[in-house]
Every structure is written in C-alpha cells, then in structure tokens.
Amino acid sequence: MLNFDIQNHKPLREMVYEELKMQILTGGIVPGTRMMEVDLAKEMGVSRTPIREAIRKLEKEGLVTIEPRRGAYASMISTEDMVEILEVRQDLEGLAAYLAAARMTDKQMKELKDIAEKYNKAVTEGSMKDMIQHDTKFHRLIVDSCNNKILVHMIEQLQELVLRFRYIYYDNFRRAENMPEEHREIMEAIVSGNADRARRAADVHICRLKQLVIEEGVKQGKA
Image 1 (cartoon, rainbow, N blue to C red):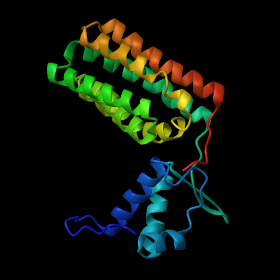
Image 2: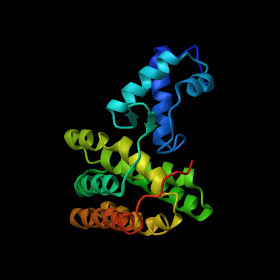
Image 3: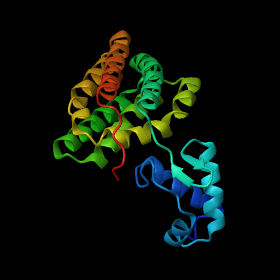
C-alpha cells in the first residue's frame, strides 16, 4: 500500500505515478508485466483513476506500452535499446571523466575512493542492490565534478534509462566481476589529473559492457 506521509504535500496522482515509475525502473515491475488497474489500485490502496492517469503518463515516457484490446504492459527492453543508450553514455561520460581529471576537488576525490571501496565490498559479498547503488553513485560523482552544467543536464536525461538497464544487466554477475578494476582505472586517471587516460578508461569501461550486452542479449523477466 502507498505510504501516505502526512508531510508529503504532493497530489495523490503524482505519488502514484512516482511509485509505479520507480517500481518499473528498479525491476519491481519487470518488463512485460501487465499493468492491471484493479490489482494495482487494490495493492496501493487508491482508486483506479490515479492508476489510469499514471499509466498514461508512463506510456508517454516509454516505460509502459498500451496495446488495443490487450491492456497496458511494462515496456520491454531490447538489446538494441541497451546498446544505443550505452553508445550515448560512452561518449558523454568519457567527456565527463576527461573534464573531471582537471576539475575534481580533493573532497570529491576522497568521496570517489570511498564509493569505489563500498562497491568492491558489494561485489565481494554478491549484493546486487549495493552494487547498483554504489555503481550509480560512482558515475554520478564523476559527472557532477566535471563542472559543466550542459553536460550534466544531458547525462541526467539518461539516468532513468541507465538505472533500469543496471537492474537488468546486474542479474548476471559476470557483468560485474570486472567492474572494480575498471572503476580503479578511471579513478586513478582522474586522481592523477591525466585527462586523456581518464577518457580512455571510461570509454573502455562502457565499451566492454556494451560488448557483453551484444554477446549475451538482454535477459528479462526477473524481479
């Protein structure tokens, strides 16, 4: 049931929309799941109206597919979709790493090292939730430290798709086992102030992930 925090002044329809969106992005509602208004309304403790409005809004964002006479479904993600988003990430985040090598503060460098250590611990423990959390923070910090508002804005537009893809590709641990070393390469290049090396390391990191996606395809259907 939806948590109606008395301090939350958002309209009900917005709360329902945000909850359904987060469930889709994080795999709580897996790709291909039918979005039954009656069931969702009962589960969240609301009427069907805000559910219907949320589904329509999510359709416009590409997270839900509505098929005539069949209903609404959480959108599937194809290998081609993931490759396209990785191609864009490769270019934009490579530039972010390049700029961060000259602009990251000492405080941010310390935070980056801390995040990398937490990520490595999550890999050792096999915690998918923590891996996703710290992987997201690692790349987010690099982007923030590039100090280029236009670039940050462009990458922010990709973040929701990237989050959804992370929950899919982390279902296979093989896609995470080389990440600590790749993160280390990026981090050391940035800390040393070597912009060209940082860009190459970021490029290699995403290129390898893209290759794994192409080789293995996208496995969907897990919560």
